[in-house]
Image (cartoon, rainbow, N blue to C red; front, top):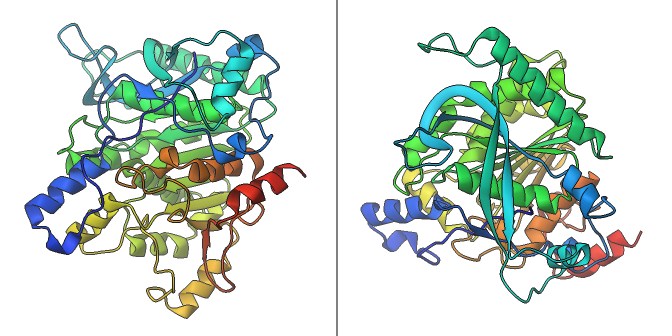
Length: 437
């Protein structure tokens, strides 16, 4: 029924990088960026905007109305699992073909009433843990933009066209039930299997109140903490498939906007595809991208700057970059690559950004750089998955998607002339004031 994801289980706390040898540092980096491999996650803390105010994302009036709009879609280019595979649905190998479907997720223990369901979602303190599992998968078929002619027994054009129409129809049916007409696509990080990333997608869909339609883009990451560089290459190899999915949704559904939520290695994929769309559609006639959110992004900052110069913001309504000063995974990544990562905090005094660049970034209305270092519980674990562990960080992400408020309207602050938004100590009180309007 309802869904959720369990935070990464890091074995290590903050890392003193200078004291580490390269083998140890790389090992910690690989552990730090992974999310695990299991078909069970615990419901994350309720976002502060829900737990500490009267704001609710649920527009459905009762359980029946919610059930009708709670379908969780997926698109994957993983290979389908066979009788000899350990996986139940899709393997950890690249399959190239883009397969669409929907997954069924079970909440344990089950809730006895609509009010109990609302309470465990919106309350800050719960009396017990709630777990989720994938209990069923229904594949609609191979989408028509797939490169199928390299297979010995490819699906026919007619089969792929039928699957495309069926998938688009299902998306439109979800949108028709919601005032919010956006399609949200979650792009997971490395070191996960199909089930785990599907559960994270359900969790995000759940806390979005099942508004709009939600898709987990399930690329072929490897559930192995030592597969980081392999998975980075796989993420790059699937850029065409994700871009084609966005183009397909824009051309064949009633979506107002298509929002991308990219986490860790998945944020690189979300960024690369957005960059491609911007370059391919300089005349402004491309897909209807809305919010593109990059979380814990292991991306070179200079490369990001080049994309800004090339007009990446012309392809989106809003580009949000969430950074942290306590993300030990990105800290080791910067040591490995010798460059600061996009998802790391900028120096709070602005020493690493020259004044002209600072002023330019601050003037870009479509760009928000948000530092979560001072957000509650942002440093939990290894600080890499704050979008789940921090009720303040998750609150800002969900408010951004549901309200389209600016960072200032969402209660964040920044010094005059600075480009980075931060969480003030009175953030919860600001939320109360904002939602009371």
